[in-house]
Image (tube, rainbow, N blue to C red):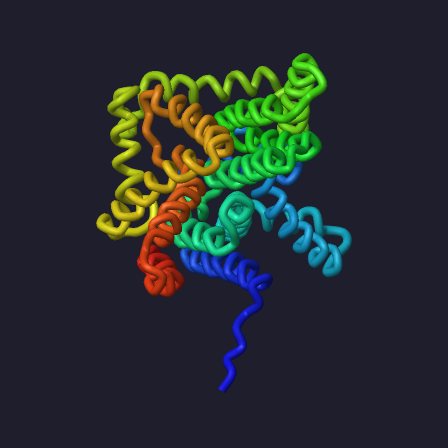
Length: 390
């Protein structure tokens, strides 16, 4: 009997799409579970309100969730208008004010944020495929798709995993520009960086690898390189203000609602308070090394060891690319640990790159194994992914 194997061209697409769909399916199953205190600020919905009620976060999360809710209300408005053209507006108002319907709209917003957040697996695939090939890219996708923590936080209407998606996409575009020597691709990366900053202010550190990559590319003169850096930063800023127009239109409310967030991170926030600096870093590393993939601490520690191996391998074999990624992650992490509040969802940006580096470590270790042992690599990756869902 001849067994027909999948085409190598189709297999990466099948694995990436399969991991994405399965993680979304599992997330949807648990979408109506738990309460997140930060969702309240985003989900105060008014039919005629086009701008957020506060600016502790930029507007991207508000825009995504409310676009999903608005689509749902538009469908209900059509139904009400068909029933009675005279009173459809009032019916729509009563529908949106009903507590049960607001709960339904919250779940719609959660599902939308879940789907968008899980698209980070595509960016992870692009980062790894361009460097080490499709097999390792598929492994990285599966590691992120089945990360307990990333999937858990993707279900909330909060900006952290959404920012991780935009930021990972921006870094994927930056690395692609470096590989191809293309300044034009960097403008696409600038747009993605602007979208990431419009999701969470701390994504502004993406401008550092963006400009660094620009300077690594050939220019006629040094001044031309600096001018292009300024133009890239301006493009990212333009996208930011386009997505968050309220920051300009409602400056008083912007500063008034942002100030409490800055104050909390500077002075502490109840049980989330930690000393800044090394104590904060130590707690963050403990969380990442023991929780990022699975409920099994032993498995997490093993994968964390491979992650460190993978970082070393990236630095050794693709030094410039590793430098750009690690520059962004180091600046972001340094900013986070300089504050007195530790919320683990602030570390979601690191998760796609934990998957990237862990896949590199596993592949590097596998390449050192005897030839026959290499046949075990696909089954091992499937085993790790299955353990991650437990």
